[in-house]
Image (cartoon, rainbow, N blue to C red):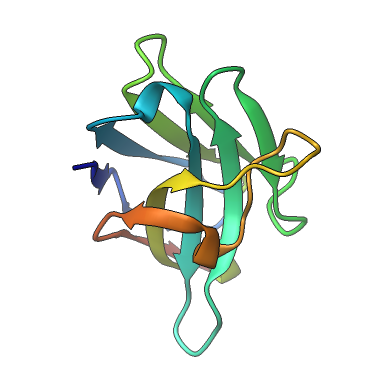
Length: 128
């Protein structure tokens, strides 16, 4: 059984930074896709970033490119999402998901339907 748990959410002013974490345990973590998704009130869930754990290849949504960075620790037990230059529109519940699909490009999917295991989410609020 794979267990996914997010932490590190909070409130920050626009222009500030925040780092959220995702701990993944269980079978198969060392070779899998991990993704970060966010859900804002009244909006569809968006795939923000993804990482392939064996080689750390990453993919980002256009809305966060250049501002957010997804990474993992050396032990490959935790995936981080470093969020800089935060905007009010970045507000939402952020979810981590594990065991996603990888495309022919070698990049992991940012489609929520292609991930099997999910955490409960962590709230990020950016005030103007």
